Length: 272
Length: 313
Image 1: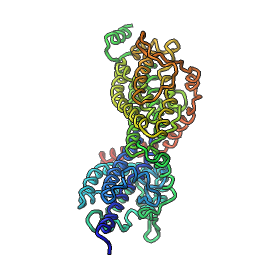
Image 2 (image 1 turned 180 degrees about the horizontal axis):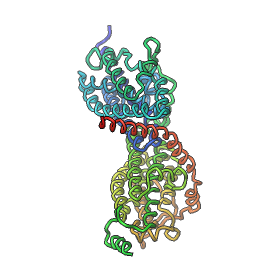
Image 3 (image 1 turned 30 degrees about the vertical axis):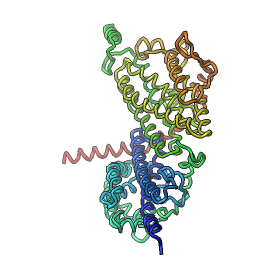
Image 4 (image 1 turned 60 degrees about the vertical axis):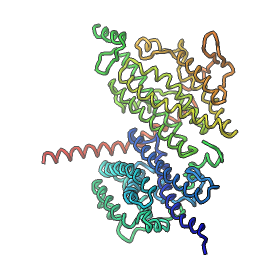
């Protein structure tokens, strides 16, 4: 028999896992976008993408802080914080989906990655605003305002690139080929997501999929690439990559963490 | 003659010169040169600091640094807009930077080697910039003065943030304290150089003072900066790397050592440790962005065309 204390802590693992998953998604994409800062194609867009980075890192912080509170309640001596969670976990402990760790590539890659993710995040947070968990609901209520803007901005850029020049359209389609196999994982529910959804804390991702598809169709239609895309994604012929949510990542994440965590690893136990 | 009189009269009465006003060609040229240099400095300045965004040691510091570098981009935008009021396009101004024709502040040709450099840049580099910028809030050209008021508010926030980074390091571990002192050692002299050549060797200073573009001389501002830093460094418990730094009771100012002018002129000429890297990074961003800007323009044109057709229909 599992003792009551142990059961409580196992029972809560799904919640911290779920929070870490949401936070890791936001942190890693925020980190990727921040690599553009100072190198953007147009000054105004450099500022816009940095804004999105800041929003995502802000979301990650709220979620890590909440996860840290829960972890400290069960093991006060561990002294967990937003920074220990971001900087002292290794590759296999990160629970972000593979899409967000994909390299920036050119502007088309960055835009399309953001558009895929923001569309997903928009419908996810729309649902999580009604979570039975008050903290998650509150974080989502703040985040959805930000994500609404991210979705509009990235969607407008998808249209601009698809409709712009031959070169921009070609680059967008190339980005699509690269990124599409990583979109399946967004809706592929892992255990902590299933538990969270069953308890009304998380969202049933199966219910979001059709909304996501619908939004993509509208934007791709306006970008003038819908028929080409529909030809590319014939049912049954598209193998999707997954594993990030359960800690099986691409080779890219290790390098992100090497950079992200460098200071905390090189100078442990310091205040910054 | 009449126009020149009105211009001089405005200067004398401290009335701002506005874009539609008549102004001497040389005044316009000086402003274009100075404001665009200032804009370029903001943009190039994003690079050494941006260098630490992905490695910032905590999430709080990461967010603050990102926001700071984003502010620099915003400052670049207001300043490019101010140069446009003088009749030059943003594109041609940026072209002058990328071709190496236009200058930017030499300070950004030094590398950021450790996290403490981010603190030192905030404290010393932004601190030196503020001295100059506070003066420029009263500059005679209206759009420039107004841009400066906005920029100064944000810069003083950055400076406090930088000082706070150093303060945290100065109270930290031995390694952190060493990192802090090392950064001050490396950034001190280049920061003093930011005020430009000595008054005797400054070719544009006299005319700029007469036109009230500048209000204080290079040496005056530099002295003011040394006096402030010499006190602030005590709060950090660190040292300024100048054996000759000493309070002079008679002058009521700090005496300080000789600046290495040979280094100064060499960095200005392009021989600083990062001149090539900085320019290459700017050029690369511009060239890589070319197809993006073309796509945006093509789409805007098509959308406009579509709208017009719908109206006609």
